[in-house]
Figure 1 (cartoon, rainbow, N blue to C red):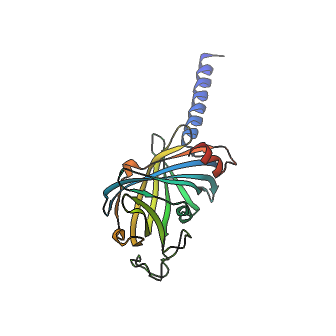
Figure 2: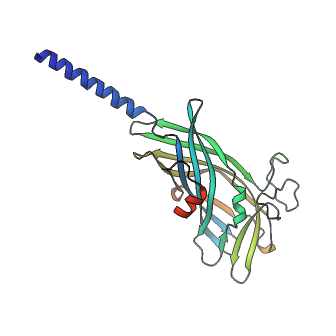
Figure 3: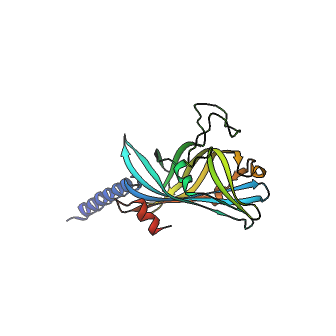
Amino acid sequence: MTPQKLLSFILLATTGLSASAQEASTAAPLQPGTYVLQMAVATQADVVVLGKVDNVTQQLLLATVSERDGGLWQHQELCNIRMETSTRVGRPRLPYSFQRTIPTREFPVTLTPDGDGWSYMADLGQHRAGWDPTKTSVMPEERDHPALVDSDGDGKPAVTIHLEVPLFGLIELYVVQDVQTKLVGRVGEDGGVTGRAELARLEQRAVGASNPLFASTPKAVPDPALSPFSLERIEDGATCEALKSRYW
């Protein structure tokens, strides 16, 4: 092979490799399949008697990513939920029935190349718990409001949250909520996603309590810096029971 032909061959091969590498770098990195989503949402709330309380609500979810209409969609169901708090004087707690208020969701995923990789954004949509927005445009404030819904199925109005307070014992707080969560992150080299959960909307009101002293609305302020999430690829066919035994 002459030097000229050798140079032409090298340039052609290099060009082909560069094109292949460029194509690989622009290919969507989030592959269809089964994932585990771990999400934390941190808030600070003013609670009667207790004062300022830092809460972190953690969710463990089973997610499936699929292709549809030329885009990616994410379907997810709640497997477990728990709340951690900073105070030792009183402790908010989510009863098991609270899980019934978290619906199965499906939403589009937006992947955007940004030069260094891919950004990920998913809007989980607006979630209203404890009340029916078709019956009122304003979130209820009274325990006997006709738009209240027993979303957790415990026979109590709205959604029940437990509050353990020394000297007072177990307090039931009945609340209505209007929440919209967005997941904003980046796709990693392993094909998973890490980022933060942002509350685009957070409104809640107390419509009553088992002890009238606590029947006031705790003002909650979100903290996205302490609200991480991770989306990790797992084996297809995984179940919620398997995730709970593997994670928490």
